[in-house]
Image (tube, rainbow, N blue to C red):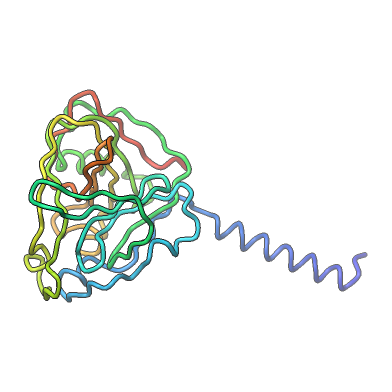
Amino acid sequence: MLHPKNLFLCLVMFIWAFGSSQAQQSPNQVKIVGAMKNAMWKGELLGNIHLDTISDKQHLYGLGPVEYLTGEILVMDGKSYKSSVISDTTMKVEQTFDIKAPFFGYAHIPQWAEHSLPEEIQTIDQLEVYLDKLTENEPRPFLFKLIGMVEDALIHIVNLPEGAKVSSPDEAHQGQVNYLIHNQAVEILGFFSTQHQAVFTHHDTWIHLHLITADKQKMGHLDKVVLKKGSMKLYLPQE
C-alpha cells in the first residue's frame, strides 16, 4: 500500500502528465488573434500579437498583416517573412519574427498529407469549392498549402500611410500596392473556414491566402491566380 505522501506525489504527476497531454492535443488546430473586421471597420490597427512571443516556432505556419497595415506576414515551417512596399514595382522581403499583427492566424503542423490538385482547379474560386467538398468531414478551420507553378498571380501589400484613419475596407487599403507574378515557382499558405467571414476572411470568401515566390523575393496577400495545370500539389494537415 502506498504511503499517503507517495500517493499524493503520484496524483500530482498524473495530473501534470494529463494536463501536458491535453495541451499537446490537436497540433494542427488554428489559433486566431484579433479580427479583420476590427481593423477594417473600427480602425484597430495596433498589434494584438508579437510573433516573437510565440514560444514554439517549430513547424509554425501563419499569416496576417503587419500592424498599422504596413506590410504582410507569412510564416512557413518556422520561418517568418515580412514584406513591405519599396515602390510600385519593388518590395522588400525580410526574414524576422520581430513583427506585430492586428489579426493573425497560425498553427503548428508537424506533418502534411500530399494531394494532387486536379488540373481543372486553377483559380481561387475553384479552389474554394474544391476544398469545401474535399474537407466536408474534416475539422475546421484549417491551414493548407500549395506548392508548384503559377501562370499568373496578383498579390498585394497593404501600405497604409502613417497617421491614416480607418473606418472601412476602402480606407484600410489606402496606399496598397499590387504586384504581378508570371510563370514562377511559388508556395501558398491558405486559411479555410466557412465560419470566419469578416474575422479572418473577407465577407465574400472562405479562404485567405498569402503567396511567396520560391526565390523569396516576392510575398504578399494573394488576390487572383491562374495555377499552372498539372504542376501544383495540395497539402493538408495530417492527423
